[in-house]
Amino acid sequence: MKFRHATTDDVPEILRVAERSWEHDYPDILTRESAREAVHEWYDADRLELDAVTADTALVVAIDEAADEDVAGPVVGFVHGVVDDDTGTLLRVYVDPDYRGAGTGRALVEYAMDDFGTRGVERVEAMVLVANEPGNEFYESLGFELVQRATTTIAGEPYDENIYLKLL
Image (cartoon, rainbow, N blue to C red; front, side, top):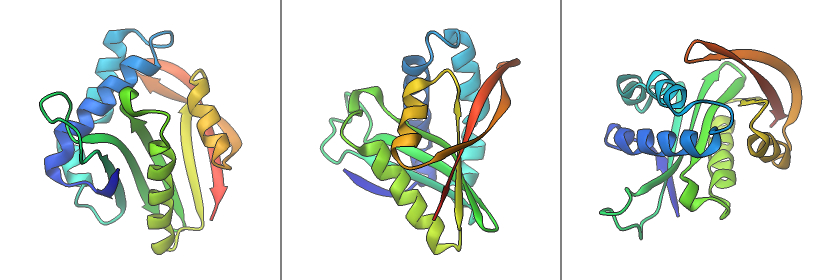
């Protein structure tokens, strides 16, 4: 697996990973229509292309160099974060369901946190839906601490989310 900052050429693959992940992770939480709507809202292609080249954004992809591009694209996961002064925020971390369990998500987060550290970040926040038990377990396994509960809106509906914090 190779990790690198995303380019605008990676955006279609990032969208594919996001859509597959949402459909896999949230079938009991969101309708398929709500999940698709959220993917297109939260992962707007124009915004992702801008984030791929914006200085205060970390958009990192995991590449499977051995992938058969006729079956699946080379991007198998991504992390999307932003930097604001001394705080880095992990907005999204997704790994294609077919590639989970091999440490790719952990490696993506570590890559992003290293990147944040070079930018002077001292604290990293992450958000995950309360109902997403594997997502919550993931952040806790990385040493993040639950510090707050908030509400986010997906497809016009409110959902509780946990906010995690890790000091660098």
